[in-house]
Each structure stands twice: as structure tokens, then as C-alpha cells.
Length: 501
Image (tube, rainbow, N blue to C red; front, side):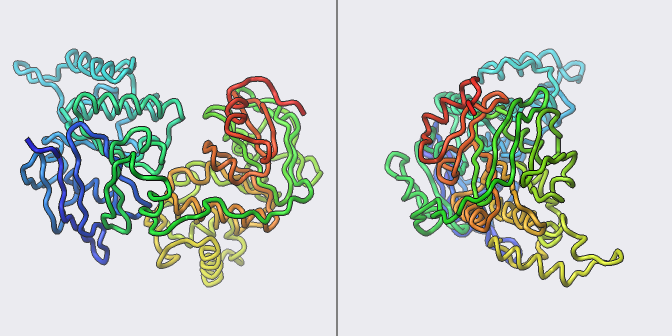
């Protein structure tokens, strides 16, 4: 019996004008958790699609349990025990958990030729229980959290006797607690002999779970290492091709006069008694556990879900913000957490996305000055260093990090004084993170007041001048960067006592 359940050698996949995979290799052992890492655009997504039969390689060989094999489509791969769970979970929201698990391979009564619902519900319940879940299999998918949907996806893979499960960025949208639950499920599957390819940008995922790690860069195979033998610095060099000596840039911002102040701001059922201020040139970090009310507070400041208690002051004057238009007119911009759903129109050009919030600047008597629009879009795309061949390219063609840069460029088309960043580096690779950090620091140095919501402790500590911690809708502590530590932040994030002002 071969040591490797899956082997890929010399895999090359070409699309018109693009070599998405260039002579890559990969080996997966039986009962192993193998991390696959690389920047956005490294070839990971194409690699998944080759393994699952979506794409056929132009060159190379695939061996499954020692035998060379060719997949003509996803059904072939699935029949051989290969399943994939994607970052953005795809399901049928109006159908039950059972229906989603057994979609395409329903249990049919041989005599009546009808679906055996009783057996399917029972088996779905057993699968969920084996993953430590108490979900009712008759529950509609639309009411489940992202973490619960992922459990259903894993149950679906197991229902077809998957021997290899590919997890694509499964922790990207999960809380710390939910990630821990997923880790336990993944380890349980490994202990039962399932082989897992775990794709992630997060180093903590790799160190917590994986036995080995393989790195792709620029569509090529860079190397494979035992996780215990590779350091963070070595991994970064492998992923980006250079050493990022300083992930967080040197700060040159000068903190000046107050630009924004909240006094006892509240929104029924979400947050209460939030009093804090922001200065020009300052980066104010807001952190806390998921569910603390951080995003809700930012959305209230921007007028998406207006606050109903307390007051806001902008440049010393009390203001009323009922909608985002009010906020933008005052000079407050907001970069939402979910850039694809809330910040960009993916099927539009980069140019159109950048200028969308400020079309009046390029219009006269209802006619759009396309030349001026194009010039501004190009200038701002270059300013935030969007990696693209043309501003006429679709936003969907960009990596996650470059999509985030386009979202920032869109904010810069309006006359802003305060910019709110909600999880600015969520789902982007280490190279893109470094670039986004530089943009944030540069904006602060230019005099913008920056509010940055983040769940990543190193990010909060590395960028913020002051740090505000929230717990269950309350502000529990505000501290300067010089006194802040991970321990102090975590303690404040888990206490309900209010901060003393």
C-alpha cells in the first residue's frame, strides 16, 4: 500500500494568455492534515479545481491510492471520495439540512422508487452527531450561522464516503471559538483516517492543525516542509519571494485636534453608552470578541443603522446622521467588512467601482466626462498600488487584497476627514496585509482620522495609537498603545464592566 493517498506531479494548467499552474507537485498522506499556503493568485483555487475534476490539467499526472487517474468532471472525483468545502459556502438556503446533505445522492426506496425521508433524516442526524453537532436535520439552511453551514458541508462530504476533504479558507468568517470547534472536527476526521488539504492565509491555522505545509507562489511549487521545521519568517519568504522585515510600517502620523466625538451613543439591543473621541492623524483601534457590537457601532456612525441614544459631534458641532449620504457629506467614509457584498460591484470595471461614490464630480448636465473619470480612477488606483493591467479590468479579476485596495481608492474620491475600516485585512494574504497597513498609516500621516475595527490582535497592537475594547455592546477599556498588551485586551474583551471615563 502506498504511503500517499494522493499524488500530483508536473501539473500544468493553462487558460488563454495565463498559466494558472506551472509544473506543480503535491503529495498527501493517508490520515494527514496538509496545509496549502500562498498569496492570492498563487494558483491554489485552480489547484483545487484540478483535484476535484472541475478542470483537466494540460500536463501532468494524478495518482489516487497509487493508481494513475483522470477525472472527466466533479462527479468522477466525488465518486472516488474527493470533496471540497469552499470559503464561501454554497448551499440551497430554502431547503433543509438533510436535503442539502443528500442533494444528488438521495436514498431511494427500491420498491416504491420514492425518497426515503425517514432514513435520510436519521442518517443526517448521525452524521451531524459524529461531528459534535446537535442540529436538527429538518432545519432550513437559511437560519444557520456560517460555522453551522460548514458543519453541514462536512457532513455532506462524509455522506458520500469522502476519503479526501479539501477545506478552502474555512476559518476566514469564523469567530475564535467557532474556529476552535472546527479544529476539533478536523482533528477528529484525521484520526478516523480522512486526509485533509487545509488552505488558509492564517499562520495560526497551520501551526494549530497541520503536519506539513506546501507553498505555491506565482503558479509554481516552492516547497514542502514539516510544520515543526519552518518559522514564520521562512514561510513568508517562501510565500512572497522576499523577506518582509517589518510587517507594520514606521508611523509618522502626528495627532492633532479632535475631529469626532461620541457621547453615550446607543442602539437598542446592540450597544449602549459608547463615549469616545478621535483626532486628526490618529489611528483608533476598536477590538473585542465577535458579537461585541464593533461593526454595529461603526455602521451607526455611518448612518447604515442609525443610533437612537446619545450624540455625535463632528469638528465640535453636534451632528445628526440618518443615512450614509449624510455621513459622506460631512466627511465620514466607511469600508465594510464584506468587500464583495457591500463595497464592490464585482462585474463592473475597476474604474467604475472607484468613481461610483463621486459621479457628480465627473458629470455636467447629466453627461459623464469619461476622460476625467478615467484619469481620476487611474491616479487613485496607482496611489493605493492596485495590481492590475488596466482600470478597465473587472473587479472580479482581482485578488482579495487588490479588491480591498479598490475599495480604499473609492473612499478617496470624496472629501473625507474620517475613514472607518472594518476588518481591513480579512481574507487577504501576508503581502497584501503589509500593503494595506502602509495605506492606513499613510492616510493617518496625511491628516485623516482613522477608526480601525479588527479581530487580529497583532494588527491592533501594531497600528493603533489608542485601543478601545468592547464586550457585549459596552466599551470596557480605552488604552494607549504603550500600555496595551494582548493580555490586557483579552481581559477587557471578556469583562462586562464599563470603562471609566
